[in-house]
Length: 410
Image (cartoon, rainbow, N blue to C red; front, side, top):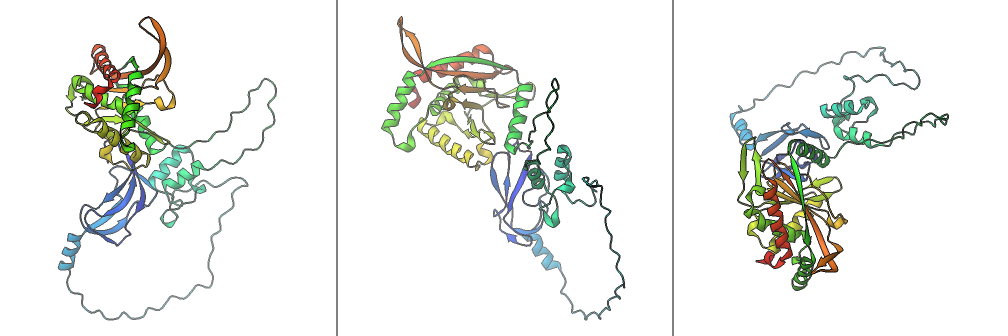
């Protein structure tokens, strides 16, 4: 469900064991690192056995269920011989009940101490065991919610999230001795945060970044947006970010090096279409839905699609095709009042554009100090693919388009 996917969580089984399903009928809901997706059946058949219960997370490629295609079920039915009547089996006498029954009693451990957990006694999934071992959790202290009381990953995560018992109050430290460390809670990363952490570390470790910043005269852009939005229906109104996306969509075909990717160590792949990813911040992490073929779309089309993708991202409903295949990314923190920042390149892309807030400041025009509006653009570039002069020319072209906004509606 995307090249970056490493694990998936079974949220819900939509079919029970023994139930049949049709081709393309949804049989389960799976949560990926970025969205929740229904898994369809590739052909009609029957769900024989569920291997991974709801709430458990497994790596990509792990079997989650056993199914029997309808064609196989029909073949078996045709091949099975007719069942002959069988004589009734004679009654079997039950063995006599022993007069006494031995009851094993566990020897209580010393007060305040639990016996070490026995792997044979504690039923837990491999992922739950691995996570508990990494976090130093005793599986014997965790109540399993899986089949037959089996401990699954969700049980370990719940135990990690539970507040730790308050430690006994320690006497005040004598003068000159440091106080004990402040108690803290630990929690595992969310799936989205794990992907973000891995990709950012990969980007900064493997991509030689350089950064260029330009200030844009945002006064014409502000006036244009006010006039444009006043003349169209509410559903067609545009944001400043829509205008930046459109400017990049016009400029990138003129500077194809910035619409490229490095393949292997010595091959450059340059794209004809401009597929712009728009960074969307979620509480659990960052996702980047992609507006495809921006070079062929009007400002109004880009605005509508970007709005729909952002809404789907916040609802956790993006499909893999909606957040993969980008060739250039825009990250805008202007709505938070951030005036200038440097974004990390989204690999394997060649560049990312960071957009700051529009700010009021005094500017010099025709020798006079007058009120003005400025917006900072900072581009982060992979130096293996693009040189500084070419990136500067691209940034100047984006600046020119934003300062003459009528060019954005051609």
